Length: 76
Image (cartoon, rainbow, N blue to C red; front, side, top):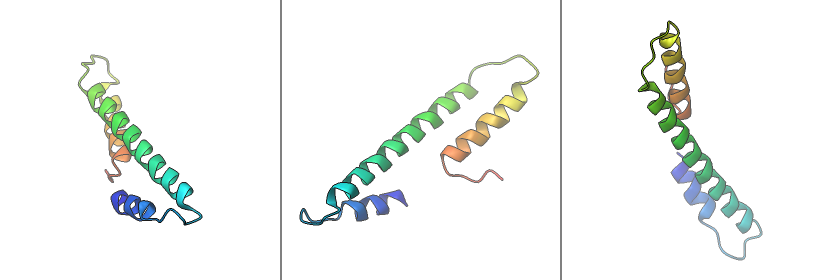
């Protein structure tokens, strides 16, 4: 979905008044997506850390929920 939006935002002519705003918006979307991907990877990496306490199961559920949210998935 965001790729189509990025293409629409960047499909402008230099003379259009909102050209700079659209380009900055597209850049910002790409930055946010990169940050979300990095956060999702870090959360996935956290799942691999061995835990021995009783709260491990709850922590894993919270991590899975956070990862799904960052990826835009409904883990209902």
